[in-house]
Image 1 (cartoon, rainbow, N blue to C red):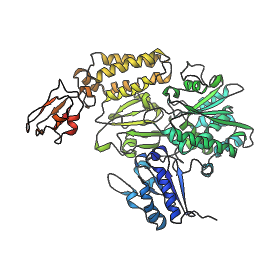
Image 2: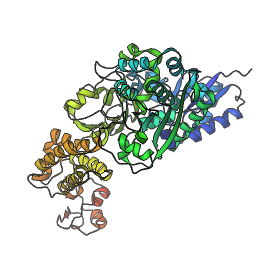
Image 3: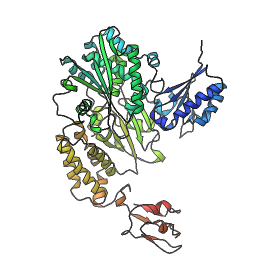
Image 4: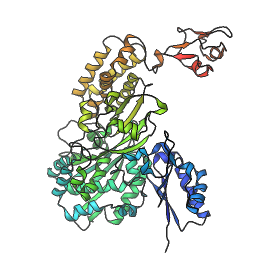
Length: 596
């Protein structure tokens, strides 16, 4: 009988794969075979482990040794030193940047210490393409319990009691949503998983689908049983090829094992799941547009009511939740609502997965209890701001969210607290900005995204966001006028009140939140024709200071001959000719050119 004494887990999420983890995995297989360890050591390809900044990641069990930024060239040393001789390769261990402390186990790293991984519990620890590994960690126990020990009504009530709220946007109570679909009487009902993750900087759903796809299938099947549906769709964007591949494998395996298909657990319950690949339209994240896309129509929202629970996919009652919401369901059924309620706050139960991006040291995925503060996420988990810069703002909730300033760093992260300050939980994108960020430019960036992704169906969103974008563009180009701020505020409020769907109604949020917390930057752009952060190029002023040694390199580099001066004398820039390209500043060996 084969005795495996060690497992080498190689992160194979999209982030680590792009950094070369497949080459690392193949190198381990070759080296282990060459050293005669093939019968003793198993290499396991996992999903995303979350600490993306330090990938590719490798964990060696049973010790649980955590190696970061591993390359294929490092593999022979790990095999020789660790697997053969039992010695850790210290140079590949994680070292805390501030203290340089060497940390062998990932659970002791600050990035993981304040996390509580429920949704991500198996991501990075099991092979997502082996259903046996999911079963080994309790997979499909929730479905089995629901079908054999609980009535559909009891399942709905348990989800209600748990306080689980939708993790894809506004945070509507999940159990209540399920009860609406259950109450609808029809010969056909559907369950839809919304995996159309389109927010800039967001990759939470993708990582769960890649790392633990069976959890989503199980959550959907439990929902199907609870509401009386026998068919489900996962709507996932085609830009997620690895997630789609692993979902297909998972569905085939679940069908072969009898967890999907006919008469599941001999209960008489039938449920099948299909995958629908989306073309990447942001508006298809809105549930009625998503259903139209599945039906083969152009993805455009429709007025509600009727709500999907009454008339959804092909006119049939339909329940739609996102990936993270469904991922919570199996453990709620297995462990009970009371167990789940111990995490989070009174009105926001459980945990939330955030994608940490931007000017932060530790980019990656973090799952934290609801109620944790933004400061804890950014500084304790995220490791603070890059290059010792000062924190300026954090964009939370994606392009429909809001930008929060430093004075709100101690705000508890829950649905109601965020709404109260003009932001929203959204799907969990969290973009950190430092002191060098122009908040007017940030508002323009997000509005440009939502405007270009507008489906064009309703006038407030189609035309309103376009007009707002034109004003923001003028402001960032030094053409702002008195009254622009008031005009932006009025247009934003009108769009919020009159747009057809939730995406249109929340599109002005980045503008409104930056006007609320960073109004002085708008005023500087308009009244002083100055960008305080020096980001808006058309407003930049390049100046040669007295540090200039007169080497003439800047004059030779300037493409429009705007710089003049004699050798070994301070040069000057003709502002009337300067095109703000910054070439002079980039080549000056004396750092004598400033941008303001």
